[in-house]
Image (tube, rainbow, N blue to C red):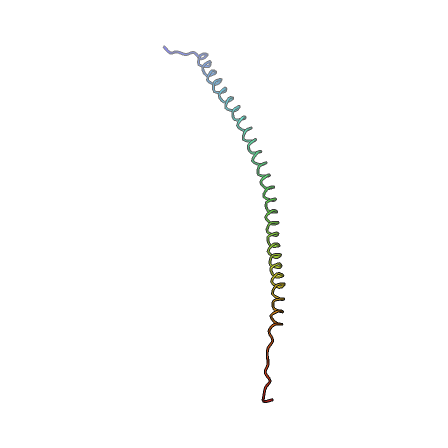
Length: 110
């Protein structure tokens, strides 16, 4: 009834092997394309990371310069305010000291 000869069986097996082999070849080609895309993405990420490191260094320098400038501005401001107070209060003190004299009364017992 269903007697298959050895040659027919071999022919079917060869066809199946060829079909599986072609599927595997297609899969391997797709994997190669996928690997190339992944490699390109990894290179892009590495390049971006290097740019971020450079930007972080420049930002660190900017923060340090800004902090130094802020401290310097505060010191100059305090010194200026001190000079202003000194320049205004000293003459006022001298005017006040010259206008008011202590009146002493002679001691009658002496």
